[in-house]
Image (cartoon, rainbow, N blue to C red):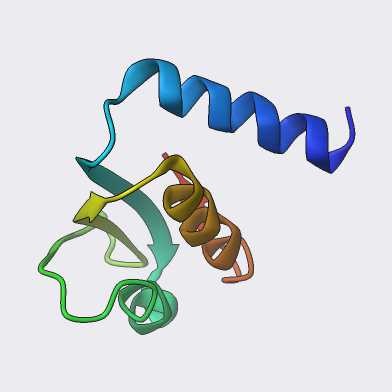
Length: 88
């Protein structure tokens, strides 16, 4: 499956599960050193941070009022460039 097919599949899935505009919850797990990069994805938002048991990783939850599925997918695309990031 090429990138455009995968993008359309994710867009269709989001649009079938959400009525836009809506509040969307982003959840990421990142190495501790990458937390600031995740925060920079959505500046001026409140974050819920939870360290892993050993403190090497941080779970980051961010609520965002999304106007469309395109905005959500753009944020995930930016997030994909952060080393070690896992999107949930």
